[in-house]
Length: 457
Image 1 (tube, rainbow, N blue to C red):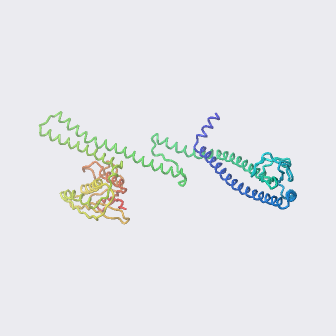
Image 2: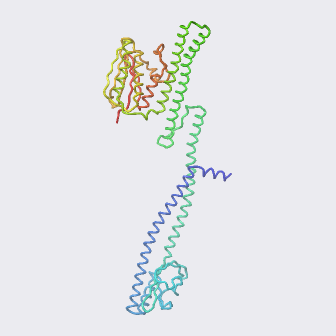
Image 3: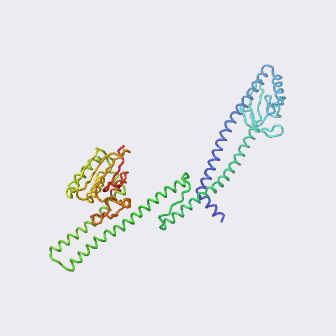
């Protein structure tokens, strides 16, 4: 039981992060204190070495100047100083027998090897760490000068012990902090899990709790909520589109079936039969048109057309659209006008042409005889490029403007008019693909549809 709990704890990301932090903290502390100790020890060694070298030179000079008695007198003076209790001196004859000093015998660890030595020496009935310098003097005498550095070793051991305890405490605190963090994090994660489970079971309106937007979890919750909002919109759009497709296809298919069934039952003359076949072909064209429009919208929504973006003169596209729809407007008795500034945007010329064509087609379709349709391309006050189409038709009520760009939505004014309700949806999709937007407003009378696109850098 306890083993399972321990395994679960160490599987927790927060606990593992806390342990990693503890290890990093301990290693960093060891490196820092080790560096400080290394620099301190080096400084102390230099100081000790300087003192030992000074004493060695002084005793050697006394031996050369005043003989053996002078050297012994210099050593006795130094040994007699109460303030220098850590000093070690030993003057020995050629056979290493003591002549003067404060240790009883020549250290075996030094032997006859001249130079610096770091040894353990029994001094004043205790084992001490010592640093010594062995030099040969004239007349075969041997001099050993050193210092007791046991206090430095004690300091080092104290530092190591303190680091050990600090490491143990750091690990314990890290584990405790990890458990607290795990508890706090798991509370937020559990809330996310509950929300996502509800969404998985079909409650797309569910949202993650976002108590504090400055908190990382709060910002994550806002981002996920935005994504869920977009998913809900897309799912509702797919559901609405599916229902609308089924509704719009049912009518032409039912009419087509009725015509064919009538032909089979009545078997009319060839001329009447061909007329009914023509009507059936028209119904099939309407169905194919719906599917083509849906495929076009799917292609735009996928963003694959962005790869073909280039610099496009929007005024030239507007001129082509005007040339195409001008005769149609004239046949209907509608005055058509174009006012376009020479402006360029970054986009797909074919999609932009289709978007402007859809707007002009709608305007001409709903504008009564004797009315006006105006296509304009210009620059807005904020620097963006604007293409607008205004007409004198019935317009769209304010309550329907938001829904007018939904797929297959047809308002009250569109009853009896040809179409499937995908024209404005395609324009809105093209605007979104180009980083712009489609806005509908009253032209008083009529409607003004404004396609706003970002200007070239």
